[in-house]
Amino acid sequence: MKIATWNVNSLKVRLPHLLDWLATTQTDVVCLQELKCEDKAFPLAEIEAAGYHAVFNGQKTYNGVAIISRSEATDVVRNIPDFADEQRRIIAATVDGVRVVCGYFPNGQAVGSEKFAYKLQWLEALTTWLRSELAQHAQLVLAGDYNIAPEDRDATVEWQDEIHVSVPEREAFRALLALGLTDAFRMFEQGDKLYSWWDYRMMAFRRNIGLRIDHLLVSDALRARVTGCLIDKAPRKLERPSDHAPVVLSLAAS
DNA sequence: ATGGCAGACACGGTCTGA
Image (tube, rainbow, N blue to C red; front, side):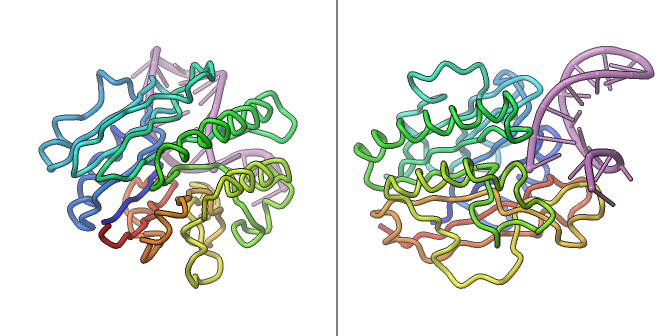
């Protein structure tokens, strides 16, 4: 079983890439972020025609998340319960016995800004809610665009002490790990300078100037099933790509 | 080095992202 996360930066624009990628990789579950479309504009017919189900939490212009899955998703939750938020950043559902939490974490804009404060409040609310989710679901994955590069090796030096790599953001990431979650990517030997996002400008992809900010954190029970985790750079090389690459988690049968 | 790209909305310029 393969579970992936991919910030598509507009589902409307990236739908052909998504459908091609699903057909090529035979991924079972994909968590999508930055749909940038309302629910009524969600391309459900195209996704169902490709053999997938979809649940989504959309928003006009900004944000928006979805879970695309071979098996039907159940027990769907949209947004963090008990956290008032206009922005559509969370969808959770159970697929094949795995609790899948898909998140588009706030960007934060700049350290010390109002949006940065919102990012930290959102992370705190997420952490509190996940504690109860983990109590109810032994096998859980938190997949998404975290907008946090957890360690120095996850960021090109140009971004040191900036947004995505600041001390409070990294502390919030470690608070998620402290719930009993593991960064699946770091369970394995990986090469140097592996990132999941590259700026569209400055030929950043060609120069490999980027950040590893898209993650799959797994609970202990799910960690026992993990057989691999990799970043798939292929879609980033296409014409008109998302600025993020998908990250793929492989699981042994339960 | 934060400018320079990309998408949405709207149809030019602004906002946002990372």
